[in-house]
Length: 383
Image (tube, rainbow, N blue to C red; front, side):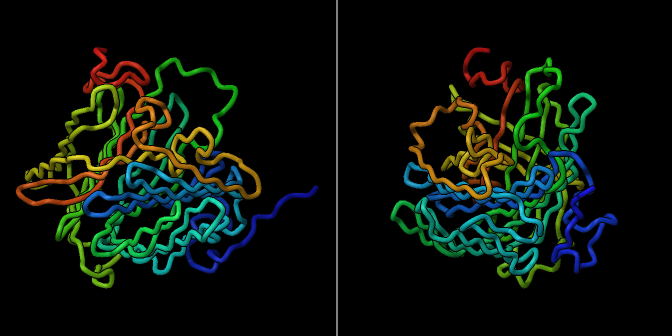
């Protein structure tokens, strides 16, 4: 009988194999295996924010990507999808491509001029070593729904963004951001058909706050259940360098992992979006770093596919497809499902120092501490 032989790729020339199969063959047969690049960038005064995402879903046979910028009260988004390449090192989708110029140091994004009018040439150069987060594992009943490894890295951006006939210069001395790499298993693509309905209200509570300071960067991330039990937490303080060549290695011996994370959010009434927030990092020696966060700008993560009703991750769109869209920030329904997953550019303050970064928020379903009882009841609703 005919059968498909697993294909070799350029990656197989490196001594990196974890199974007897070629690298292109995932170790797991779970349909939800994925491998993702994700980046953000923002000017230090909050004038603009851009997000970048690209992922391959080997068992779905799909690779997709997105680029989106919010500026002057508007958000513009580029989406594209293709049949997944046989070679996983082929990181391009139509006019979009990511180039690993130097691993853990320098990444280049090129979005060539295309029919959407959205284009960019951007270089990300690391400011810190990598921060490996703890393995994120979540079960739904007996089924493993999420099992992922993730690392973050801080850096600076340089280049140009073009959209709607406008050009935005991106200058390294002013535009900071974060790289996020993750891989493993998490729900993607079309929902499974056939299983018994979940009797519980679906629930996700996630906060992530990567922040830049003058001589270091701080990292904060938590998942909580509906009872406000923190089932996963990550935090670190890592030295920052003026040049990527000065970073001591993939990991930095000067990195300080924290042993505890805390948060307090004041929500804008009628939404699930922060009006302000406070976070705290608790270190092994008992010291406590308290940080106040004041939002400057809101980015809807649907601009790069998250909860997008048409361009969601891992959706089959054909051999190659792309589209552009834009909307006025003030016109969107703040309680619509597709508008819940956000990142806010935030001004950070700690012990008289000032920093800049983002506060990512996902809040679906109940959360006892903040008074949410339904899948999407807003703050201040009296529930």
